[in-house]
Image 1 (tube, rainbow, N blue to C red):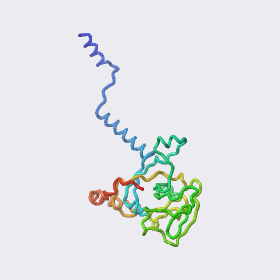
Image 2 (cartoon, rainbow, N blue to C red):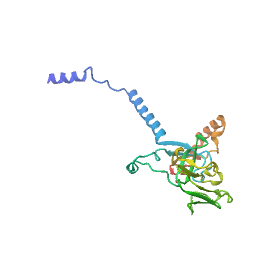
Image 3 (spheres, rainbow, N blue to C red):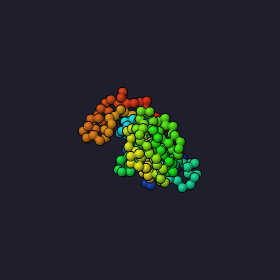
Image 4 (cartoon, rainbow, N blue to C red):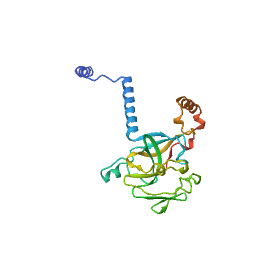
Length: 234
């Protein structure tokens, strides 16, 4: 009995036994893992963006904070990947975030109206795709473009025809042309928070932005548009 106890004591105090982890080390490792996870998801899976203008009203309002799925349009090599991995091709009607062709460091958000090969025509305030008039419940009747505007265009290979839901207030493919697919960053997934912010607030001087941030922190409990939180973007 004594030898067994001594053997057990010898094993517990063996010089090659790893030292126990400290509490601080546990916290540091946990924080590092969380930081790596957040950086990975921000770089490859999700992106957080804020809506600064009214070009997508009433689907998206100024001050909506949205989550963008950056992984959904990831390229695939085999068909089985699309069956087992949550990725797919860009579809008509998707609301996408992309690098603005003329200024790639700025992100834009619009709705995909036409895919490569589609024939887009605008007649008296209505959009026709391949000679079929689109039913667009996301466009408010008062937000349609002027009736005299008319265009006919075939979407080129590797490009998209995109438009804002607020047609009177949107700079889109009607203005700057078709969107190269490689500039698409992801699909707008959901609104995670909404606050009635001022239009183009990001363009204001730093002192004004700081004052706006303070007001937001103080008033967010009763000014936030809570009914829009976690609303899926369609």
